[in-house]
Image (tube, rainbow, N blue to C red; front, top):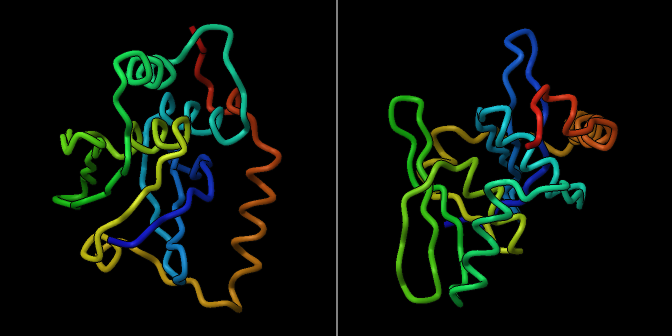
Length: 157
């Protein structure tokens, strides 16, 4: 497993589909994962440190984990089958729970939990971006600094 950082979320054009971009820590691979608008908003909120008026599902899950004394120790992106990514939530108790990567990432950001990707997933879906193309990634980061969760067109109830 390789540790991953969340670069951010954006809306891919022309499909208007949100994507979360992860970066391999200590490596040059990036992992793009298509996600839903609700999860994109949840990830963007967490990255920007925004607190909605009412808790989102991922905030609620974090609060429940704290209330029952469970610690999330790892999020693992474990598989890619037929274009669908799979993830696991790993708890201190040893329990592992299957999850969608978008939900797992949103929860990891709220709990400060490290995210890992399997070597197989990174080999299959990772995109190597050499240092000379790092300025493109920097442009993406600048874009992320300017976008707000409201840009995803979802309401927060």
